[in-house]
Length: 440
Ligand code: SF4
Image (tube, rainbow, N blue to C red; front, side):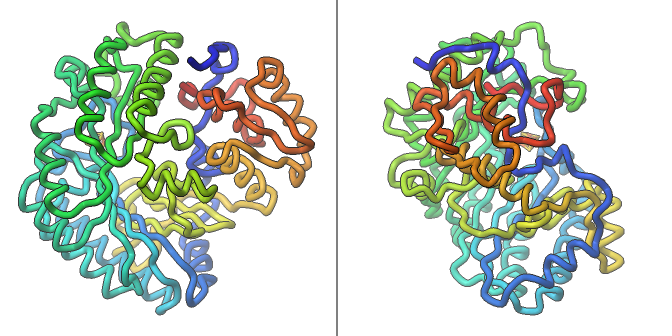
């Protein structure tokens, strides 16, 4: 059992899918920053592509994603047409430089678009960029996933699929506004396996209103029986002041901090006992999965999609609100679909927000990624290492970290505290910053 120190988890902390985090993005960047970053891509440099599909069949009440209902064909068609335009815009700027190592579709629910539209996007990407052999990954909503979609997944050679599952419990599904019968999930897994998908991920949640250990354990057992290669297990963050959709969720039955901690520990214990390896602080993978191998050989990375084995230093984001990551800058397209449409329609990049990363930011970001991915970070290159050491004294006193010179190492049972420890390296955070979710 993990040691419980509630005072060390009380402060909300970022998930650190980037450093600086998206909360630090400002409007002082624009299309010229994107153009300049693309101009510096080397001829053989490995790039990843991320395409954002901001549509869903129905909107779940808990969801913080930038997405809307896919109930208007004209709106969806117009979005897809612009996405094709943006592919051409980026490809023209790259002028043949760069090699695509991975292509990911996320959202939203990419399967909210017709399968034939997905196939057309993939075909366009394959001709617009040098992407031979680049594996495709896709997020899907099991509701509405059908044989037509499975056929296109087989035809396009999609290698990885992530399913939003959250919970198998029908009462909890109703509470969070995501009703999806277990049969829909089982059918989706069966279709994906038959389509040749070798790596399936389930997203699950704990800390839901009314969720107790028994309900969580039942969902974990149903999950283990379906044997997805990967799992991401997130604590539900109830922040209706930031995500107005969540006002529909009855917060009176939310588990308290101690119960949430117990549920995170329960998931960790049950999944590792079933043969999964813990990856970072909230992912799990079967030992033969590339994510587990990356964790074992020290090459695990962190990007906007969570923990990853993707080695690319550059991710190009396409679509409204998509974020592009370059070593020296993070650039986000306009979140507002209208503004994104307008920019791409005018043959301009839609960059609206972002941040330049100084060499020191990059060193801090590397230290945070090292801690979250490998459990160890060297602070030697950080000028504020004495301040960090002081901030971490509370964790040291209870044995959650240990020092070896300037290297700090997380104890083996300190996983739930990883984000809180990482926050000590974050020059943008102050102790009162309450914008983020609780660490567990
Ligand atoms: S299906 Fe996924 S992206 Fe869409 S609203 Fe639900 S949780 Fe959000």
